[in-house]
Amino acid sequence: MTAIPKEQWKERIRDPKIECASRDEMTALQSERLVETVKRVYENVEFYRKKMDDLGVLPGDIKGIEDIGKLPFTTKEDLRDHYPFKLLAVPNERIARVQGTSGTTGKLTVVPYTQRDVDIWGECVARALTMAGLTKEDRIHICYGYGLFTGGMGLDLGVQALGAMAIPMSSGNTKRQMTCMEDFEATAFACTPSYALHLAESMVEEGVVDRLKIRAGIHGAEPWTQEMRKKIESILHINCFDIYGLCEISGPGVAMDCIHQKGLHVYEDYFYPEVLNPVTHEACADGETGELVFTTLMKEALPLLRYRTKDLTDITHGTCDCGRTLPRISKFRGRTDDMKVIRGVNVFPTQVETALLAMGTVAPHYLLIVERENNLDVLTVMVEVDEHYFSDEIRKLDELKTKVGNVLKAALGVSVRVKLVEPKTIERSEGKAKRVIDKRDLS
Ligand code: DLL
Image 1: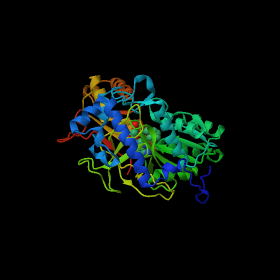
Image 2 (image 1 turned 45 degrees about the vertical axis):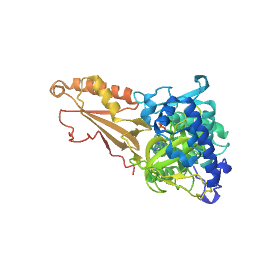
Image 3 (image 1 turned 60 degrees about the horizontal axis):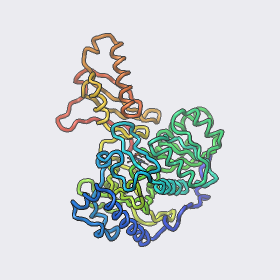
Image 4 (image 1 turned 45 degrees about the horizontal axis):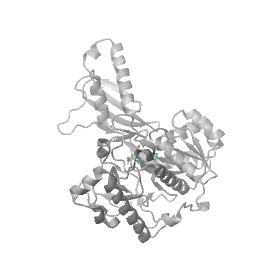
């Protein structure tokens, strides 16, 4: 496998008029799109009409992007409260598809798309793939999950828009992934960074690295470090790129970094980014860490005003070495909430609590421990159970352990290791309970 040598690297930009626009040109475009979006949501979405009325803001008060601070915020809770389709801004028959969060139950967030939303999503991913140096000549092996999760479908749409060849593997079955990668002569692959590293090490073990034609890896959906990137790059001799997105805004392809690795370029002509102090909601200066907030500028089915992502980052404006003027956000520092991303799946401690309490056979004292083993995330859930389980025959304890594991897997959508412990083993807290210990080094 060979990375594209730096000296041979040609900057590839799919849409230079947009991606290299001057600030004035971009502001004019964003303003026009924001004014139109606000008018549309006010007319079609009762939730926003009420929120704006409560703030005393009328669509006519929004004259350009400089007025964005007058608009109300939207949160994940708002989406859940309006589950599944109560925030639609278009008639039902215009919905072309739905996607959702990576969690499988309880916390599901559903996102409807019109065909134009789908096309724009594909276009954003195609821009990102172009940024990774890929063209229609490439064969892109997609091992993100397909389904409601946006990873598989998003990359697929991008490959189609690029005109390249999609290899829709979905996730799992490492041996088969390697065989297909080799046999189909894939030139790029896309999956979570933790799986990329696992795959890379498996390739070394199987001795297939030199027979593969992979040049680039497109990784995201979970936080990962520069060190992890370097490790994957050095094992496979490729270039890796960090792709970001969230289903509420469209999926992967909201932002991605270029070969210069100076932050992830945000497609701000479609998604207007703000970085705000999570407490005061004041705008952060360039370089200052805050919560990333997006306003969609072209979304038809589910336009969102000032959607609070809870992802912590900072933003930089100014021209990048690649020539793009799109602002750049730093690799993510974490989240403002307690959500954990385990093997690309969003997991909330409250989902564990709900599932455990519904069982009735275990105590409501639990602890999540997240670790990284062989480069894969491992979630251990420690749960207290009645002491008679420890004095009775061991078979009963084993049966309960299997049952808890099955219940949690069904609730979370990821397999979990279960550790049943005696009462009072888990530390009690006087203030907020500590529900998660994250031992992965994601700094
Ligand atoms: O994870 C979309 C996606 C798929 C992105 C494939 C990239 C590749 P959700 O399931 O809605 O969507 O989860 C979104 O995942 O708010 C972040 O906390 C986290 N996340 C996504 N990409 C990155 C990344 C997809 N590159 C949530 N770095 C987001 C760090 C990321 N965290």
